[in-house]
Image (tube, rainbow, N blue to C red; front, side, top):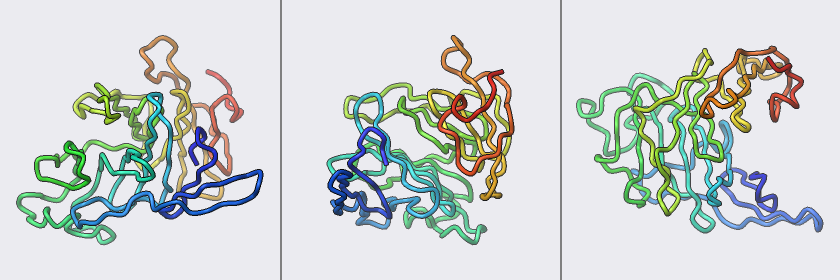
Length: 247
């Protein structure tokens, strides 16, 4: 659920309208239905969930994760969320990952095993060769209201600009390093530039959450050291409300 749109819920690729007072609900649409094999699917319906948010520019976005393929950023148009940016694997030596990731990438010499970024520059929802870049060092696991892409491995990618139609433009060579260490699979929760990161995500029954605090006037970057760990069955909404002490 997007906190800014409490009358809508997204579940298993379906947008639902909810009326809590009347206790009624109805399906409205599927939020994305690809019609071409070279179009990203609706990632993350069951793994990681579909996470919508309303950005500061007033437009609605969403992102989702698919373990076997990658992470996708969507932009809402009407009742449809169109894929805009996809980080994905294309490899023939990882059993859970389908190969080729997309039919146009079936030449292993042209697209060797690795991680790739696709950005939909012409807004048609389809992968074209000129829109695909090999980028093994990029990752993201969270998107905030400024459309910053956060990686639990200790990085944040901020848009260099946002187009009038709401498309964020990133320079993936410009990365801001954060005082976080660990595997990229340690998903962060970002609230107002404060990070809560699950340090033991494989132990779903009792994860440990580490928090850092913002850097004051340091251009919005994260600075600090981890506190805790404080064990919780669910991620804290913010370090302050989680019980973590300031450092």
